[in-house]
Amino acid sequence: MQTTFLSLKTTAGRRGAWLLCFLMVVACAACGSSPKSEAEHEEEMIARTEFTDRIENFFEYEPLKAGEPSQFLIHLTDLSDGTPVEKAEVTLISRAKSGAEVMQTKARVGKVTGIYVADVAIPTNGNYDIEFHVRNTKIDERMKLTDFTVE
Image 1 (cartoon, one colour):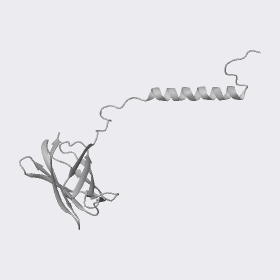
Image 2 (cartoon, rainbow, N blue to C red):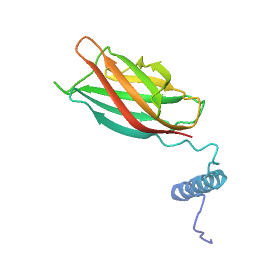
Image 3 (cartoon, one colour):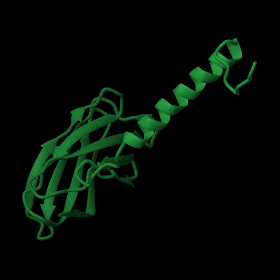
């Protein structure tokens, strides 16, 4: 009787055959995937942290493109006690470098306390300032920020 590496008559041989088939399927599946094209590649979020004497504003946003909405995820912390800023009215006011107001948007309250979501759509490319106005029963803060580039 001749012995082979994978004898299907034994339990070990059958396991080996299944393992070999499994590895071939995995190898074939890996070969079939292709890298994402530039259009499918999501742009990386831009993150900034800014402070006033009263609040910390950590926010992330999609790169700004003329006429397209960019979602701002805004995380606000009350620095007097370290708690999230609750039930605030958060308004973002975009201004051209000349100081002229371009647009204004109110943020929605997020699902988690202290998080707000705003969609900012600036119509033309250029450099802009954005003022964050945060107001609730405890806080009334304005945070004027510069260096927002719209492509």
